[in-house]
Length: 379
Image 1: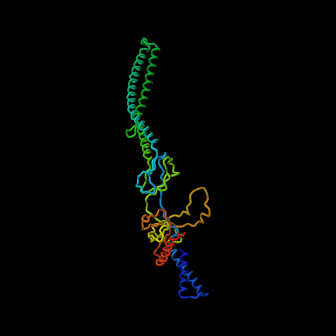
Image 2: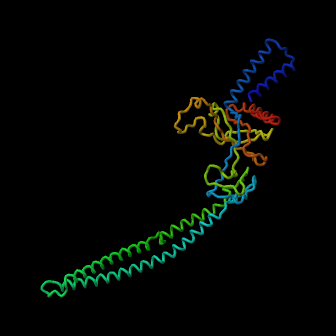
Image 3: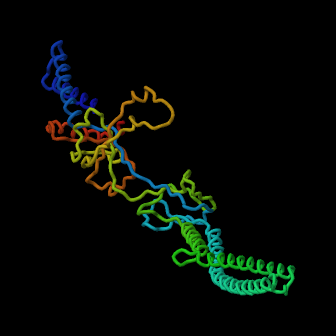
């Protein structure tokens, strides 16, 4: 844009010299040159600071990498490239057979677990009956042992021998041990029967959770559009392996979004870049057209100053790199109505309230650059 302004002044001087037939002398030529230096220098100073110009402007947009939640062989690709899709429309499908088999296996195990709940209750009742039986046998053995012990006391005539008394004592101890074993078995059966979460057997609840997870994985074999938008450059084909690892997406989804222009500005004009300021944009894809808009924000950070922990020291060259501030411009015109693809590039200018009369020259120069785009875009 600076070169264009110099060329305009040079053309103006040539025209004045021709029309008024001013001779080319050692006074007239230096006067025109010095006048141009002063005039153009003052104009550039006022324009560049008060009405910043972004030589590089580009539409930035967000894409969504489509990574399936489960891995498998692709059996169908249903999404048509570059066609607007509604949220929830099918993009592609993964072979569901392995997941259907897993669901069937867990359903069978769940039915078996539900049947085992009844068996556990029956086992508890059996254990309770065994405890009752063991108690009765223990009590009978205890009474017999007591009777034999009394009959073998001194002075009572010793009706039973020492061996018989010892045998009855062993029978009693065996009955006591059998009772303890039966009680332990009853405790185990009772714990198994009462092991539940919110009234549901723990084994049954565990299988139910696994079954829900398997059904969820089965439903995710059909990958659907996350939002309204479209897929482009589709290279996925049936028979390919779709992996859930986030290393290589299966598709790239472009969601429908508000179209905005990101423009870079020199740092000396940051103080003049205020949100809400008037802005204009020219695009290489639309020669001669000026798009009006507003500066909505100035990004609060620049990449050139970013530091991350990496175990290495930063280079002085990194510090010497000159960064530009990025401003976001929202256009009043709908770029979709022009049929322009996402990511178009161009140039932008922001007009402030300071020295607003100088903004006229900036607008003229911007439009001239837009006309030049008919021949070739200036980088």
